[in-house]
Amino acid sequence: MDYKTIMTIISDDTLFRPALDTARCLSERFDAHLEALCLGIDPSQQGFYYAGASAMMVQDNIAQVREDIEALEQNIRQILASNVTPWSSAALATQSVTLNHVVSHRSRFADLVILPRPYGEGRGHNSEAIIESAMFDGGVPVLVLPDDVSMSEPPSNVVIAWNESTESLRAIRAAMPFLKAAESISIAVIDPPQHGPERSDPGGALSQMLARHGVRAEVSVLAKTMPRIADILNRHASDKNADLIVMGAYGHSRFRESILGGATRHMLEVAAVPVLMAH
Image (cartoon, rainbow, N blue to C red):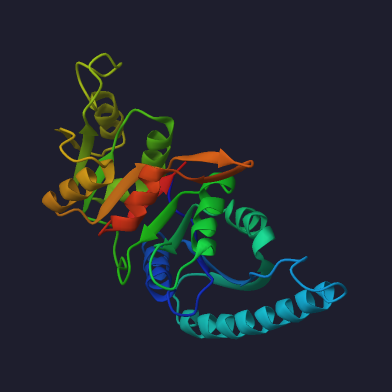
């Protein structure tokens, strides 16, 4: 499978450029349609105003959010005007309480969503919620970019985090267009279980599957010498001069809403290279 629909979701007028530039470059590389969703989010909630004012205040807030996001979309349209591959853009205004539904509904037909890191200065809960909604509810792989990092070409050196999980395998399949274009691939297996199904050949079955797709990979069995898995993966990625990490995204349900688990969250906080995740 190739990427034929690449989406980026823009909810901030200061953080969008690396993700948009990456989406443009990759859409040209894979001859894909680029979708830019400009999303204005009203954080206010009904019931927080004095009696009788709620509807009026919400309407005013939404109107202002819509005006701001339409102005941002005009800027995006000017940037994309010179794109050599097909593209489209849309501006939507929503409230925080409906953000999950809007993102999952609009992203579920994309092959890849490209987003900035959700943690850091100037980013709040909505940035994380957008990633969660696309991955958990939209079911689409997400490429998350560290601050001020963009991809002008598919990655040359890739590290795959392999722990035999369904999420990890799903991320690997989603990353196949990148893996086929890469020059070097390392399958990182951290402390494989002594009694697991791959105890005699950690990563061997995955390596065989990739080879049948024309993807050659080496297996690196790593000891858990650091408390956090993300730190071990980042150190290995640095040793391999990797420009992409592929891993499964994990979460748990809270009030029937999936949220990022600790290992996934920590990886997105500390990764120095783009991370492709799928759930």
